[in-house]
Structures are given as structure tokens and as C-alpha cells.
Amino acid sequence: MAAPLNCELVQLKEGEEIGKFAVMKKLGEGGFGAVYMVKDKDNDELHALKVESMAEPLQMLKLEVVVLMELNRTERPRHFCEIFGKGQKHNFNYLVMTLVGKSLQDLRTTSPLRRFSMGTALSVGQQCLEAIMDLHQIGYLHRDIKPANYTVGRRIIAEERKVYMLDFGMARKYIKDDGTLRNPRKLAGFRGTVKYAPIACHIQREQCRKDDIESWLYMVVELIRGHLPWRNISDPKDVGQKKKDCRKEKYKELFGGCPRKLMEVFPILDNGKFFDTPDYAAITALCKEAIVICGVQEFPYDWEQ
Image 1 (cartoon, rainbow, N blue to C red):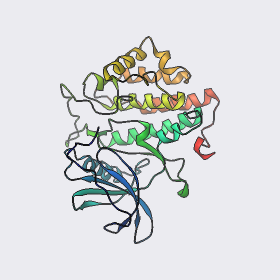
Image 2: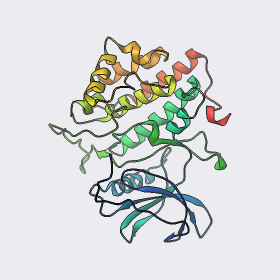
Image 3: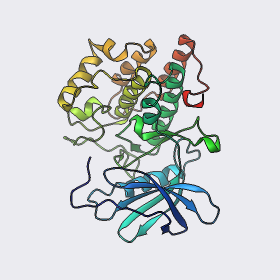
Image 4: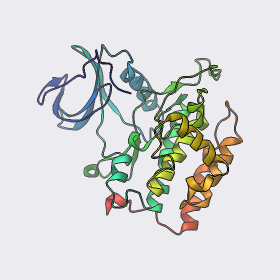
């Protein structure tokens, strides 16, 4: 998604202060805001600052704060950033959170073969699936699972083996306040990234928990192979059709070069209905079995060497 033409991105200068946090440098920007490295003036610790204009029609940062706050209240937020500050200043909302390392997307595309080793891909995939499960357990779907929305921790604090899930601006709560599941809408708009979106997105069907895992599977295949069969297709409808084909008679186009155990994920998902809890344990077990069968090691990860 791109920012509306009438909404300017928030730009902060080096040295500018947001509460007790001083801006060090810009780390990047997207359609709806920017990310900066900031220093806590009380203890010199480094964090990440996300900002979003109050004029932005889609207030994605507010949803991210809500989701992260709920995750931070859980007993063990294994794969999520900690919140160090939040609020409003001038014409923008801001969130101060854990400073993380490179995304899986950047790590893959800058690797010599543009893919991970089998051991790294399967091990990292398990961590990514754990994050999905933890998010689902607090009642939210992510709806934009992709390598760019996962990062590893910073090497300087010995977290280069830890995977973080990021960006909850497209998340949707699937559980009502009384604990019951929300009924699907008759028609749902496209949410996510075409390359990794589940088939449900392509047919405008309400997403459920197993759809996040379908996106996860596409991501893991790409981490292993370095590409997906629809990488050169631009039309979302054609991408959706290609995914349907790979789900059936052309499954080898998707899974060629991957452990056969990964082919067993789709049947697990297809056996589940809209309201069913996915069998996360069975899918994790398939990844573990694949590591053993392939005779590969999880560690060290590729970027540690």
C-alpha cells in the first residue's frame, strides 16, 4: 500500500527529542510512517521509534500498539518486541520498541545463493510458526506473514538466533470480547502481500488462523528454494490461480527441492475448518522430522558464519 497523496510522512531530525528518547538516525520508512533508532537518555539504551501521521486515514500504528501491549502481558512473549514508550507529539503518533536486527527478507536476498541453508530455513521456520501460534492465542490474526515482517535480534546482545515478528497494522481480532469466535464476513477485502497471501485473499474470503499458516508455508519454501513459482507473475488473479494449481496437480512446482515433509502441511490445513484451531504441534513436528531426515544442523545460522 502507498501513502495517500495528501498525507506527508513524518520526518524527524537527528538529535530531536521525543520525551526521554533522542533520535539517532532513520532506519527506514514505509507507506504510512518511518522508523528511527533512538537512545534512552536515562540509560543510553538503543531502541526503535515508529511514527505515523495523525492525518493518516488508516491508523495502523494504533492497532500495533494494542496488539503489542496484549502480547507483552502474556507470560512469555517469545518472539515480540517490548514497548518502552508510546504517545503523541505534534502531528504524529509514536511507538518506542525493541531495536532488532535484519529482516529474514534482507538476510535471504543478501546471502550468496539468495536462499538459506536447509537447516537454517527449517529452524527459523519453526520460530516463525511459534510466533504465529502465540499471536493466535491472544485472539489475533496477522494477515501479512512474509519474510520482511520477521527479523532476528541484534548480534551485539547475542540475539542473532532469536526471531521477532513485526508489523501488526493488518492484524484482525478473530475473538469477541465474550471469548466466542467472530463469524466470517460474506466478502472481505484483500489484506496482505500478493506474493505470500493465502488463497482466501484472492477469492475475497474472510481469513482464519490456517490462512496465516498457508502464508507461512509459502515463506518457508522461499527461504529454502530462493523463489516461488509465481515470482514473475504480477496480476493478483493469476497469482491466485497459480497457487491453486500448486495446491493440486502442480505441487512439485512449489515443493521441488524441499523436504517431502513440507508437502504434508497442506493436508493438515485442508482438514481444518474456518473455526478450528490449527494443529501447530503437528506442523512443527514435520519441520523437526525434515531436519533429521535431511541430515542437516540447525545451528549456527547462516548469518552467524
